[in-house]
Each structure stands twice: as structure tokens, then as C-alpha cells.
Image (tube, rainbow, N blue to C red; front, side):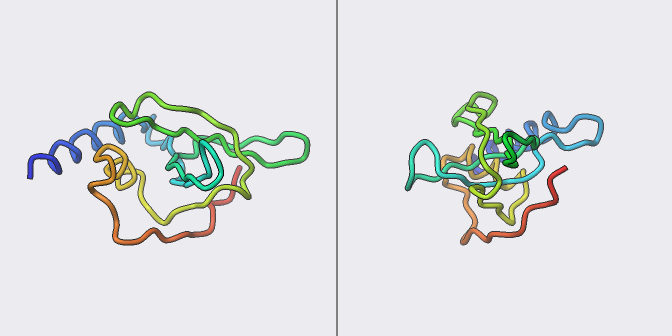
Length: 114
């Protein structure tokens, strides 16, 4: 299927780009309510920080069809929905505009923020 092939190739290229010295830049796949309550966006945690006693996750939200553009937001860790999904599968979902999607989204516990 041509669409799947192009989505796979683009996803593979982006995953390779998002890896620096074998250290994955996109740490975890999450959903968060953005741009308003009731709407969920997919994103990638790129790091963690603290502000005023709150733990924040830096989340890159790619913008289709060009996933290298998007938004970077800082969200409270408690507001992030961590997904049991690989970065590659999430990129396929985003790049395909939702055409390549898992049958269900499973939540999981977040990795321990550093």
C-alpha cells in the first residue's frame, strides 16, 4: 500500500533524526488536553523540569503534515496521559493523519522523570 510505505519511510527517517548518540530525544508518547479542554493532542516528552514545586514535562506536539514543525508546551506531569506506544508507532499515527492507528490506546505508568 503506497500510503503505508510512505508513512513508514517518513516515520523511520524522523525516528533516526530524533536519536542523538543512541539517546532517544523523544522519551515517551503522551496525550494531553490541547489546544483546549476536551480535545487531545499527541505529543512526545523531550524532558522534565520543576517550577514552583510542580513537576513539568516538556512536550513537543508535532504538526502534520510536517512533523518537524509544531508546538512545545510545558505541562504538569499529572495532566499527561502516558501511552503504551512506541515513538515510531506514534509518528505513523500522526503522519498518516490518523489512517494508521492502533485499535485501542492503552495508558501506562510514566517512566521515572529525571
